[in-house]
Amino acid sequence: MSEAEYLTVQEALTAVLAGVSVLPAEQVPLLAALGRVLAQDVVAKDSLPPFSNSSMDGYALRAADLSGASAEKPATLQVVGDVAAGAVLDVTVEPGTAVRIMTGAPVPAGADAVVPVEDTNESWRDRERPLPEQIQVNRSVQAGDYIRHPGEDIEAGQAILAQGHILRPQEVGVLASLGIGQIAVVRRPKVAILATGDELLEIDQPLQPGKIRNSNGYTQAAQIMALGAEPVQLGIARDTETAVREKLQAGLDAGVDLFISSAGVSVGAYDVVKAVLEEEGNIGFWRVRMRPGKPLAYGTYHGVPYLGLPGNPVSAMVSFERFARAAIRKMAGHTQLDRPTITVTVQEDIDSDGRESYIRAVVTHDENGYQATTTGAQGSHMMTSLVKANALLIVPEGVKYVATGSQLTAWMFDWPETIF
Image (cartoon, rainbow, N blue to C red; front, side, top):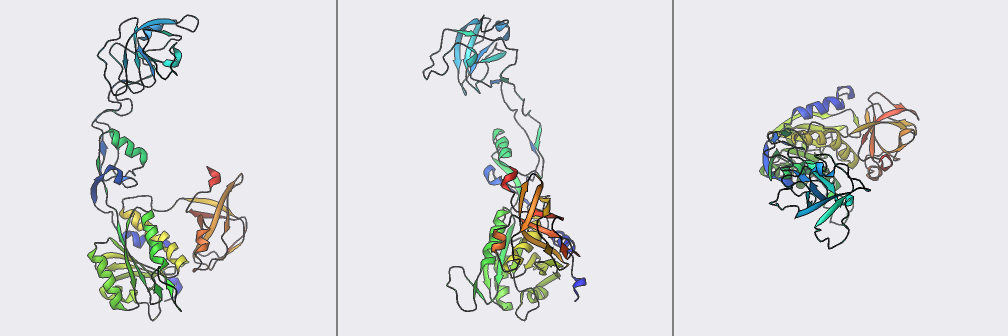
């Protein structure tokens, strides 16, 4: 198979996304819905605010009683009551009277405005704050001043959030204000993680000659968790088809929505994952014109989508970011599948091999815009180069040399602090 027959990154991504679907909805407690995608429209049953209330600590009164009031000629009103937030005062504000009112308290009948307490002669910073018999007001107000009116924010029957909306803390707050304690959201994807190889040790085992620890299993679990999905760690499968089948059966028994494995998908004598998929599932493709990450298998295992990543840790992580991330976000109901991208100016020459390449880099921001420098050596085994990076620079297919000062697209992991 010549390299020209390998899929492009976009062709591979299209195939992966065609093989996964948005998962069904489930009802969850409100806080469990944070970061998830609404599976229904939300219509308000109540108005917000539900009643007229004060936006300030002050006095509820009739605006007409303050006509012409000023610091030189204050208006004097009789104080007939005191109402706190959460209380209801059974009193009507008549001409020449006022009611002391706290922020959020319901505006009493007869009042059409509130004047802030600092515009009166009350010693409002006094901890005791006894209720005065009279109050002097040194300014005028208009009817409606400092009053929050019913339905000013939301009216009963109003459509508030649409299906597909991502719930952030502010949406959670609105739903709580409307008394919605359970909400329908797209179910979290359950993703199985399988590491393969006779050379692998569990991370708590001491190193042995020829052995390495299973870092990929933990990297991929963290990537899955960062997407709000649920990782199901199947552990390590040794380089036999029987071992791989046993681990995959455990995933089927757990009801996973997607399999992700690392290693075992190349052309080596011990790359057994591809053989298992060919016998008990199918393989849609298994090579992509991408650097790092050329060996990449996609297919199904007993009807469950399967993505086989390379074994080298950087290749595995970058391939996950490019393909698994989009698949998992689609299953979770998202429509924005990729990380945000920006255009950057590269600060050094970059060599490539003609495949679409993802170069680990640090992006900064200054008066000239976004600048990018690589994190150094780009070996597919060098995870520290990813630790240093806040972005991946995308060198397009067919480009073998990028000169200093050229512009590339950067796929952002994190944003430079200097832009905030």
